[in-house]
Image (cartoon, rainbow, N blue to C red; front, side):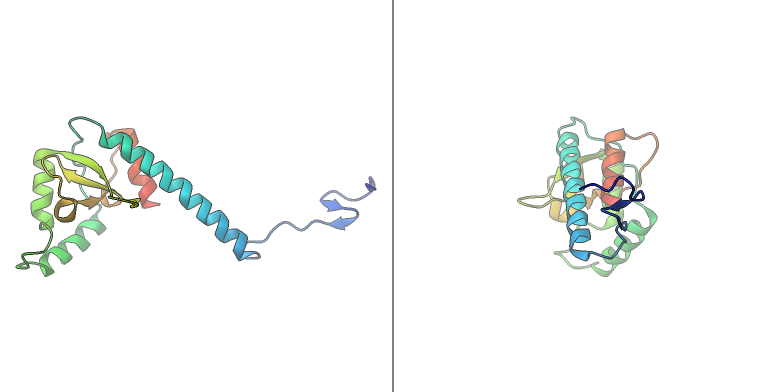
Amino acid sequence: MMNFNAPPNSYAGKPIRPAVAGENPEIEGQIAEARRAVAEDRCLRLGRELSAVPGGFPFPGLTSAAYTKAKIESDADAGNPYAPTHIDELIKRLEAEGMKIALGVGNSFEVFVLPQGSDNMDDDGIFVKKLQPTDDMDPRLKQLILSTQA
């Protein structure tokens, strides 16, 4: 029986306490996993759409943190014949050729950029999340970059 005299935010006269963050880690984990899955789906959808754009896109550059890390790694790999393309050489190619969007292989949820003339993700691929978003870029590309950086 409903108690119509019960105070608001109560059930049968007992107060209803709002959920508190950290109170139920299992449910919060499920919510976080669902949000991650939605974000991955959106990134893959945008990645597929952008990978079909003929002519690709102008290279916007890398974030300063991504460039610094890649430069350190590239310099450390100097002289290794199995190392990926040095970041400075790769940036020159991306600026000269433009870039295209490529999806990871198999069950990978990763989205990469490659120079227009390359299909070698192992040596020439850069994760799209390392790109610097700009105001004048294709809005779908900007959304993809920002989604992967979140």
